Length: 480
Image (cartoon, rainbow, N blue to C red; front, side, top):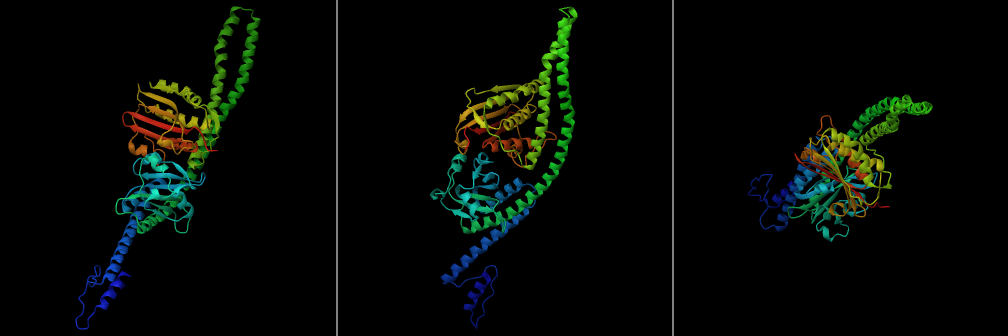
């Protein structure tokens, strides 16, 4: 089209006697004084530059996106390319969770971005929710003037949003799978050309993410099948133990009843007293040993099922019942005191005895806390310490989006070796890895899923050589 306009300009000024001098195709001239044509050429030049940006963005996205194999890597790469191409200060990519009908912040770039990781917002709220529901992009030059702008995100992160583009992440002809928001242009401001560039990127990202999800599902199906076989084997191995304990317990009860009869018939003779004393230790100890062994067998089977469910992404919904969080802390600490003692690590409890009762799933929170503490103890050198701390209620910027605002704090702090920053940033994502030989990083993902299903938040602060602190905040009240 540009060449046609340039040709028309030259045709109007052709002279039969003096042929026009040939002009470079890339830089045609416009006769001076023709303001209208100069304006058209300038507009065409801007349009061409915009198309070049689109093509450049598409090429960059194609090269980068389809080299990634995980959803989180694709999300991160897409947002980084978008911010670079559009020269923006910050942004986020949020994916839809159909189970809760929320948009979950999967990756953010910008100040205090980490505080939003994993946060979910109902699709009925905010500009991002509107764009997701309608599939129509949104360009906001001054977001503070918009009634549908939700300032709670800025208040939580400490970031000040001035301008914003919001685009649905969807492939051509498909339904949105999320939204991308790009914040605060460093240049003169976002325009509709920038919005089109972002749409191109999000369209490619949607296709790549769906492809990665299908690949992950295939891998998960294979892993779940293997775990299913392992779970079956574990059950078969535990069954003789459980059956033996159930059989042995009444036999011991009968044995001690017979011992009591013999002692009674001995009328205080030395042999009877000796028999009674010999049986006392076993009589007092075996009920506890049997109970602990049977409970451990059940926990092994339950834990195996939890791991399989976590791999499938099908962690059971929490069973909310009112209880005392401190009771769970004491239950977790009881068996781990011995583990800590063997490695010369001091396990401390800092309990807030005024902690109010809340509604939570006792088994799931037990598993989450046990996972964190049992990981912290081996990571702490001899002479170090691991502290389990409860505190509440709290109310600060990090928790204002939790229903009711107030939370109870549950922390696990260690004086261990610390977590390398690249590992820390990926702890609660699909790319979570472990620093332990043979570790998978699956444990922290399970913990994060449990906390999120309790409408809570989990963060971690760490410094190499000094230790780490995992902080779980659970809401004091849940929305009914």
